[in-house]
Length: 129
Image (cartoon, rainbow, N blue to C red):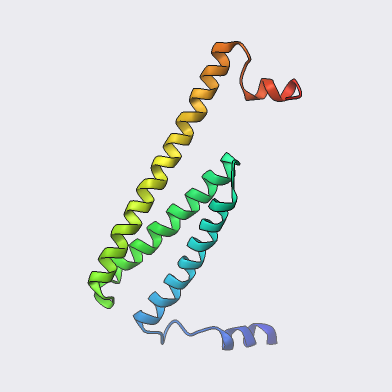
């Protein structure tokens, strides 16, 4: 019971926080998510599934940052905010194309395996490849 009281006392009071403080905390958290996702994407190497998940997380963080900047636009430097939102939209679009290309590549590989008679990736795994 005392632990909860101590946690409540240490937590910031959102009821008395200004909109700028709320925005700052939210953007800080989303920037951390963005940077972690960026590192995960860079470290994924040839692991297609891990790269796809990292790209999804990057897009999510970019959309959330962009949305927060749109909602809180009156509190920010509008030129900076608009420029950052433009860059985030470009990044999100690029990551969406990467996802679409990876899906297309997966479908093409599956079709090539079926055409060659080798079967799909599941058939190769059962043969010990």
